[in-house]
Image (cartoon, rainbow, N blue to C red; front, side):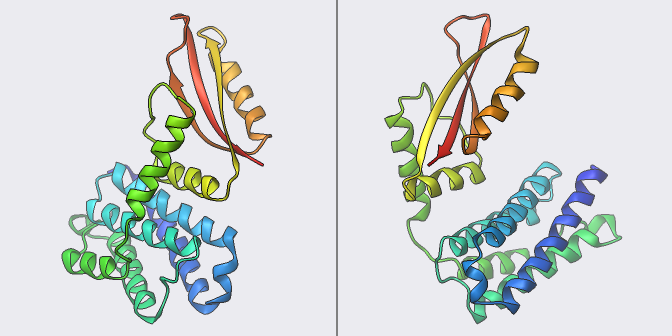
Length: 222
């Protein structure tokens, strides 16, 4: 077990617990604080990523569903109520206890995982959200005629769809780099792109010159 990643996952769940306590105490007004909800969403996304890397399957799978729940919340869906607050509170405590345990054999284990997963699924609306996201993204990449559709992370997909739904301008910027100057020029070019808006993703691609490296930058900018 990577101790650094384990420490990061423990820090993340404590931050998530604190943030959710703030949400419960300030509901419903806080649902208008988009920055706060986005920060919480990113924390859960990071927890999902870290626990996936270290093989904590129970927490990783629950974090995936929590991420979807809080994505709906930050998009204005009325998913938070007495029932969902209780379910989320219980799950956060279960995850925290399973990460902070001193018993190595219990690390990351949720005793009643199946029941917990069913409870969490029960507060997430059954709709075609995932299919809609896939369709929106597929249509976008068809419209820009990108060579191949990249495998965006869940967070990158959410950011892209959010900007598309808000009619933000989405730009695909292509740039080639030589092998000799790649290490220096790519970070510089990336910083310049960020000055123009939100850099959603960087996609490696095939350059016309086989000795060059091409990257395609997905930028959201008004």
